[in-house]
Length: 310
Image (cartoon, rainbow, N blue to C red; front, side, top):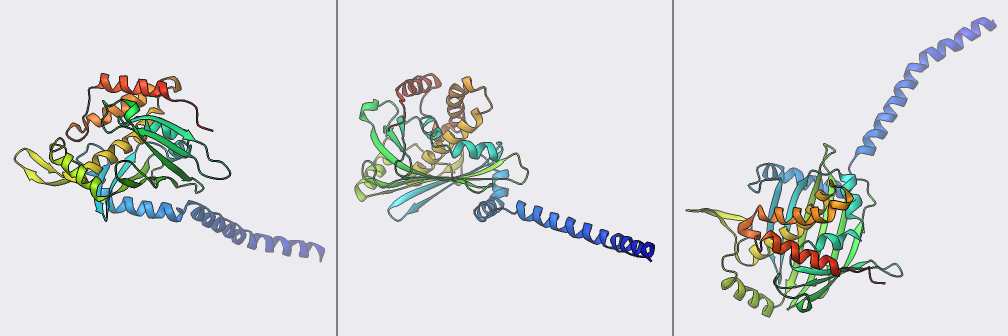
């Protein structure tokens, strides 16, 4: 009887083992599928990528890059969408570190000084930018733009950096820089969405339009509005202005990320070279100075950079 009972239990085990194994495999597969499901904000950003993927792949800008702009009620917004050849984990680690942002923003030719202001009592950190209207103006003539920083990298597949300033110079206000990123399915590339917007009062708008009608009448943006005898006809005016500045700021982030490929001791100079070279790919829109002048200005700016404010 005992031998028959043992055989019966072994038989039960043999019959149940395949079912148990299948159940465990299904649970494991379900858990893996759940773990790989993008977070809600990543899903939104990936959906945006899917909607413009064909445009990115056929971009006339020489890389997966798309520029857009919009006139808002009382303001302007420029947007840049891009695929960068950088693993998300590395990009997110860099972008979510407040101390890196002054190094990025100082690459812009009009930003002459930057300091990180650490938050106290749970308040967010801030960056304080000294910005000149033209690159050849002395740093003493710069206006100060202080932008509070908020970052969220709590999701494993999404990071967002948000910089805001309520005030602004020369009749502007509500300056807002936002960068969000998520990994693309191939695992080795990252999709970035960068936006820059601000508000302007009537006097500021009129002054800008006067500049664009005189000294800036040859300046254009990136949006193609048609074809002319000499090739593409690019957008001008206020939207052209915000597109140029949005791309310049996006390229500060892109240049910083790309310089990570260099040895640490070479990264500062590589960032400068990267930003200038990237701007020169679009000379009609972004050319301002020769490389030697840009490097001299930026090296001087870097020598003024001090420790973070208390």
